[in-house]
Image 1: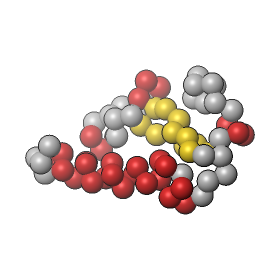
Image 2: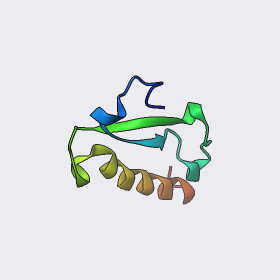
Image 3: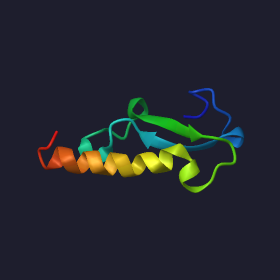
Length: 68
């Protein structure tokens, strides 16, 4: 996936993630997986996608409860 997006894995702080989360019916396929990257050398919540996971979980809860 990193090659597909032109990202050198050794130069970035990244993880592969789903565009549409699996818990909301997203597929575990190449067109739904993409690298989320943060600043090089960042740790903890300084890596933006780590903070995003909390928001994603909150929104998933709202969708499942009919709030969205």
